Length: 289
Image 1: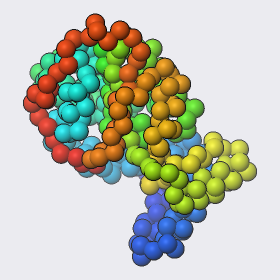
Image 2: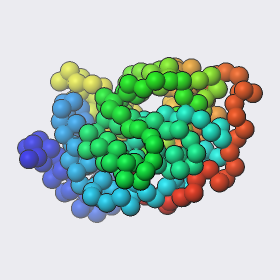
Image 3: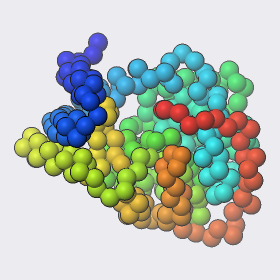
C-alpha cells in the first residue's frame, strides 16, 4: 500500500509534468520540488524510491535487462582503464547485469545490493546461468560486508547520483577505497551539470529554507526530485568528493551517459595489462535504470 504522503507527491509530480514546457513549468517544478525535498523525511524519501523501483520495467519479472551485457560506454571505460583480469567490486549491483557481464568476460566480480528483491533476483539469475559469482547484502549508501582487496570497482549504473548529500557520498567513497588495492580504478556514472542553472538554485534555495525550518538534511545545489532524489554533478564537485577519499580523477565523460574513472594512488606498474575492446561479449544499449 502506498503511503498517503508518497501518493500525494506522485500526484503532484504528474500534474506538474502535464504543464506546457514553459518557464512557468520550470519555476513551478523547482519551487514545488524544492519544498518537497526540504520537507520530506528520510523515511518518506525511502518510500518514494521503493515506489519507483516497483514501477520500473527493468526490475519486473524478466531477465532481458540483466542479460543485456555492458553498455557501450561501460565496455569502453573498462577496456581503457581496468586490468585484464582480477577481482572487481560492484556496488549497487541491482539485478546483476554488471556482475554477469564481467563474470562472462573472465573477471571475478563480487556484487553488493541494498534492495532485497533485486539482490535475490541477481542471486537466482546467477544460479540459473551457471555462473560462479556472488551478490551480497549492503545497507543503503554503504559498500557492504565484503573481503578485499579488489583490483577494480564499479559503482552500479547511475547509483552515485542517488546517494543523498556530499557527506554520505564522501563516507561511501572512503569505505569503498578501504576495500581496493593500490592503483585500482573505479568507474562511476551519474547525472552531470554545467554551472548552476536557475532551476538548481531555486530548488536548493526553497528546499534549503524548508529543511532549515524543519531541521531536515540540507538541500544542495544540484539536488532534484524527479521523482526520486537525485544529484547532478559539476566536474569540480565530483573531483573534490573523490579527492576526499584519496581518489584521483582520471577521466570525465559527458556522453552518452556521464561517467568518470578515478583511481586509488599506488604502483600501477604491478597491474595486469589493460584489456582490449573484447572485454565484454554482450554490449547493450543505453537505457533507463
